[in-house]
Image 1 (cartoon, rainbow, N blue to C red):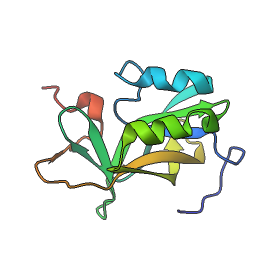
Image 2 (image 1 turned 180 degrees about the vertical axis):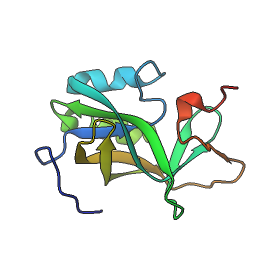
Image 3 (image 1 turned 180 degrees about the horizontal axis):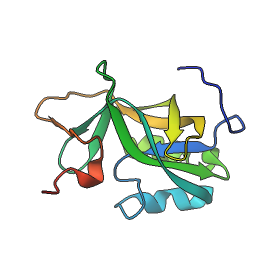
Image 4 (image 1 turned 45 degrees about the horizontal axis):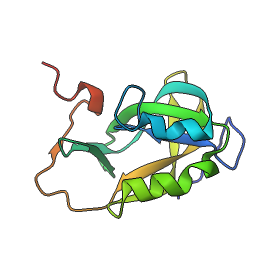
Length: 134
């Protein structure tokens, strides 16, 4: 778990989402119980893999970045267990340094993919929503 100087209070009620939990995506509704306060475009270090129905964030040593949304919640703890269960055994929740595209930095929860990467393609843009655009 990386340490970070944060512009925001701790413990983190921030969640970085990059796939099906993003605004307009299939599982975004799961965040409602925690009461969304703000949503800011943001990015974290890593590579994004496309498993077709969902993406997976993995570590990258090449300086690549993954784009998504930094979501401030009134209480992340209200949904943590439900999200952990929904993400399943191939994803591990951890804290990561996150940078909003407005320049603010914080420590945010993220679900990092830990399963088999066989058959997955790298999303070169780092943005899952833009993965199949011409």
